[in-house]
Image (tube, rainbow, N blue to C red; front, side, top):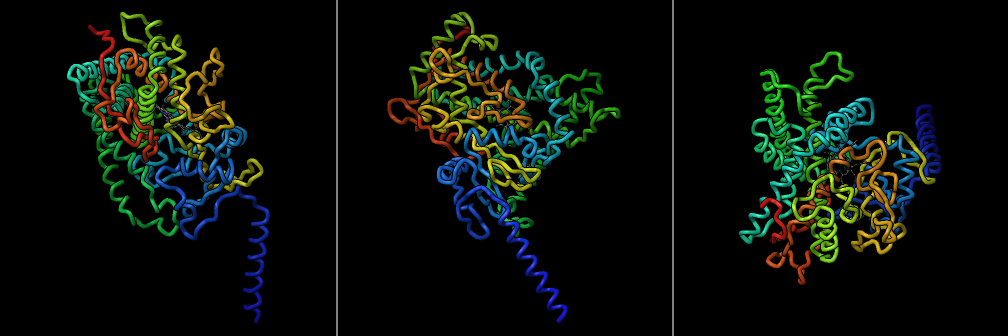
Length: 502
Ligand code: HEM
């Protein structure tokens, strides 16, 4: 009798306690969840669009259960400020997804490292040696050279009257730039490695973008029902092989008396320095380089692809941008990075592209402590999605939000000079705060200069393409994927307008 009494007392106390707890915790509103899968059935192929539709009903802070995982979706500028600025400390880490853990050494890297001394150190090194102002200046000739290669290739295609998949060519451009900056062009076989790296990262990105039951449904945690683990393992082995070869080549070059000169050299030197502020492992170096490749290649290329597609569809905007470029640069030479401050309309075109097509449409964070935001309780361990895509299209922040109108970023045309530094919470293409994109300056330099040189040198025809929507328009449908890819590649035939190299 005593045991029965004890057990029933404990059960009743447990229920009373959990009911009281439920009463006290106020989670954001959200749709009714199904058992096991939660709201996964709402997600659809393009999550930021699905979240946007739900947020219209449930408001700017809502909860969705992705399987057993509580996620909070933030869809207004005011609420983004609350999460990313007012309560920033609670949201500076990112969740560890299985694909990231298996493919890119997990938190040994940069993008998914928890916020702490290691991440701060790596970010400092990265800004000092790769992405800061002084380093960007040093690498300027690499970027100009790679843009020249692209233009020469397009002139050749123009002469042959051939169509070009602009997305792939732009990805080659950004990949070559990042490859040369991190591994240096003097590194033997750098070009081959750029190609190998591009194809492996593409495969990796597809895997990261695949919905993995093991991440979201607790009883699938240790199962591999979709056979993804095997694929992660294969791609990881090939990536690791490639990275190992790169490190070995750098080590050999150094032992032959070569001076340290690129990012890999610098990281290797730190890893061997007993007195270094932070002990770097071989895995840290590989993960770091892969993260920079992953974050820096597709993002800039896809932004240029969207910009070009909008320009093809808006010939008057294209013409105004070209007039501006010729009036600043003249007709003797190709546009250069140093011209950019004098090209406000071009800059506005890039901002407008980033507003409508932010290639990081969902900023992903994780709460590292219980927190109250906007009157709601956000428990430790919840995933946070800031829907940058939806915020950029919010009619409360933007007039005529779906229209491509670069003038909205030009003060003289009645617009505002909003910048991309993460303090204007209705425009967050590069995120905000301590986890903001460290590649912002590089991305802007590459995207603006390459786009300007394309506008200066070519017209783009889409008449022979499956993309043609009639009247030389291309369709603007979004595809599946983490970095907001186009649903259909942008295939055009470049027609030479001005050749600065003859
Ligand atoms: C148009 C181009 C790009 C866009 C739109 C973009 C956007 C973003 C966004 C939205 C984030 C998350 C920020 C946050 O959580 O607040 C991010 C993080 C990051 N980006 Fe970029 N990015 C671009 C280009 C680049 C480039 C060129 C590099 C480097 C070469 C780079 C490296 C990184 C890294 C390392 C992170 C992780 C930072 C951290 O977790 O602390 N990105 N980027």
